[in-house]
Amino acid sequence: MSAPHSPAELRRLYETRFAGKSEYRDRAWRALVEGYFARWLPANAAVLDLGCGHCEFINNVRSENRFGMDLNPDTVHRAAPNVRILTQSCSQPWALPDDSLDVVFTSNFFEHLHTKRDLGDTLIQAWRCLRPGARIIALGPNIRYLRGAYWDFYDHYLPLTELSLGEVMTDTGFTLEEQIPRFLPYTMSRGGQPPVWMLRLYLRLKFAWPLFGRQFLVVARK
Image (cartoon, rainbow, N blue to C red; front, top):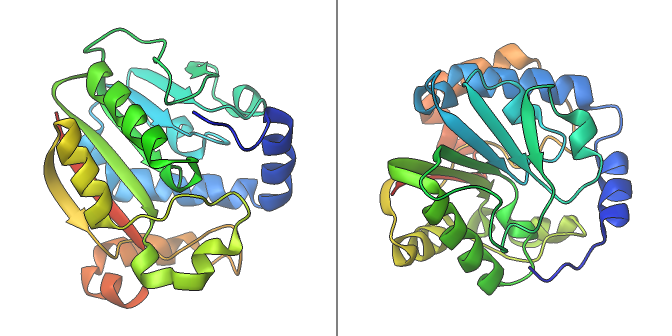
């Protein structure tokens, strides 16, 4: 992957962006895992959190084998003791065997890749490492509903919708299972911190997603 930001730059950028939000983000991701994503995360699964950042998702997963991948040098210090961190470019061959993962999860990461080729190469690696029948789950900002606000983050490069991501996943060989154009609100990095009970309620009130959702959710199977 062409790397527009060095590891040191990534550390500074995310330290500033998430300053004072670590506890809230951990609680919010616990609610998201328990209230929605757990259906795809069986206890015996091998799960990789791609672009895991500060590990809020993977630390709250209760699966048997947990992995994270990120170039941020802080990531290894944020991971739970039994989470294995792969510090490498996601578009280069992953340090994992073929057919070894049950789930690849990624949230708000693909938009940080520098080029479409980087995205395609990353999906090829996900395909290689997932077992037959295993899933990739991708959450990210939907450019269709954000327009200029999408570029409020300095390290956004690749604008995507649920349709464009679904198209490249299909081209890689995945079979689409879900394409939700409006899932979660845009960001936990800016603005207020609504009570986590409201997030749990929001996940159950699907009629509210088209009103407030600015992030897509795409689920595909190998």
